[in-house]
Amino acid sequence: MQNQRPDRIRKLLADLVAFDTVSDRSNLPLIDYIERYLASLGVSGQRIVDDTGQKSSLWVTIGPQDKAGLVLSGHTDVVPVAGQDWTHNPFELVERDGKLYGRGTTDMKGFVAVCLAMVPEMVEVNLKTPIHLAISYDEEVGCVGVRPMLREVARKSVKPLGCFVGEPTRMQVIIGHKGKHGVRATFRGLARHSSIAPDGVNAIEYAADLITEIRRRAALLVVDAERDSLYDVPHSTLLTSIVRGGAALNIVPDQCVVDFECRGIGITESREVTDAIVAWAKAEVEPKMRARYPDCGIDFEEILDYPALDTAADAPIVTLAKQFAGRNDHAKVAFGTEASLFTSMADVPSVVVGPGGIAQAHTPDEFVEMSQLEACGDFVARLIAHCAK
Image 1 (cartoon, rainbow, N blue to C red):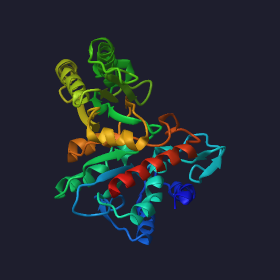
Image 2: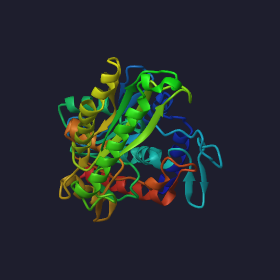
Image 3: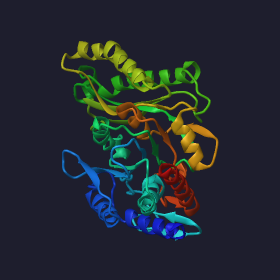
């Protein structure tokens, strides 16, 4: 069966890539496919469907249902391909020089394909410790789909022992990642003809005050914030990312929308930083707008939130991950994953370890090396052997 593993991985990855699961589309056809595949092996799962009925996660247990197990977790959605210069159909798997090209090959259908390819080996042995597959949706738009699934997991009578989230790390064990909190500020001004600009309230100019303050605080984080040398950027970061406003050159703009984010190394630091900025704007900017015209002001809304991951280097789940990966190093990464939500929402110790590199994720001609998928297969094979003891 091991000799057939690479072909199974290729076939499954080709099938998964063929589903256009960009986050604004339904993933149900892909979930249907996975369920049919699992059913052919005598395995079933639990769907957790969203409120629209168009998206679903899938929780699968292979082995004893009444014992604590280990989780392999991956998401089914991918980022858009619009505007990218692909050399072939992004939803068709192409193999060239040991690399498998297609949207999601690295992030992260490659990992899902490996996990599914290993199910026959999971079924063949008599697992003493169960292996769970946690397959989610809408990770790319804020780790949305995993949350209802984790609420179900948290209610189960037996909690998993730990979780391996297969985001691309080149099979290095990742014990921490930054958290992220994103905020949208909508400035409500007063439109006037630009010839009488002083009679209006310029939403863009007041938004500029906020943007300047964000930049000032971002510079302070570089020199004053807590540092962690395991990160490539060893401190929290803050930036304005999107600004939209104005209608015409001769109109005082009555609206400006500013999106900004903090990626924090502390568990709650991201929100603490953005909350402080919101408080500053309400105290320093909004009163000046209302003094000009009482209906003016700023509306704030949260647009994204996930906590940081900070798993202890000597935690049992880290030791297991290193054993299965066949390496003894660990690191932290700036990008976020669902691992922190497994920890914070379901109290399941988690690490990130998966095939491919983050540099290939979200790019045109995204690819994963076959050697990385095979290394991931070896990881899961060692997990199976461990759970069979």
